Image 1 (cartoon, rainbow, N blue to C red):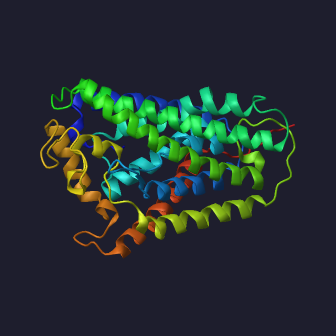
Image 2: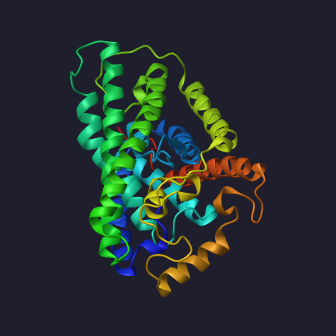
Length: 349
């Protein structure tokens, strides 16, 4: 669901930068008061895991489309909404600048669509109310079911909100080739299917964390649960999973267009519908701001489309997954240290 610059008018893009920047500023202010240093390694490794997970497009059967996880629900469940949101900004910015995934002019919109809903709406309105409730009764199995319900509902609902925002932003940008009703009719159902799969993936990861270190799950009730692994072991396992996913499983990603590309261009080459039938080489709005953003992105993208420039060799994808995951983890840690997040405060007697 990474939007290209051509889908946004400069005024709409600027508005979305302001909206996402405001949410980021509030998150930074909130995290200045945080005193949970154990979040440092968790933030680094989960951000890397989400980066790696976004590299794997999974096929949506019978459609000619594919989808990939957004990760906002996963990050907010493990880190809280503010740290999760900032982690998503790191992920999306690195994808944009170093891998040319999503437009630079559209970055503010992509942060809003892919991060704001999952991290804030998903956490406060779905995750926390469900996991702190008494749905399904008492006991460990009931808590597992609450984690699953919150993960699946959260991913489905927040991805629907993100997909609808894409439609609104393109409509406000005045792209006549994308009539509102037809675009909605394509975007919402395909992202419903994508959200269901992401919900199952998120459930699997969070249930592993629940079994391993239940205190890492934000907003859960205080009932004691025996941890199976130390914090270090849990973080190490997630780090290995991120490397395996980004460096290995990413080679198995579906070649079908993702939900947004499918809605815009279809997949007629594979025998499916053309959908909106836009020309992939010439669509949307043209502007000096978009041209400038594209030139900057061309200069910074060292592994465009997660590959070596001018090469389709699989090793390019592997290198992209490993290097990108490491970059995301490193930048997340640097931001934490630079901002003084998660440091134990010294209280004088």
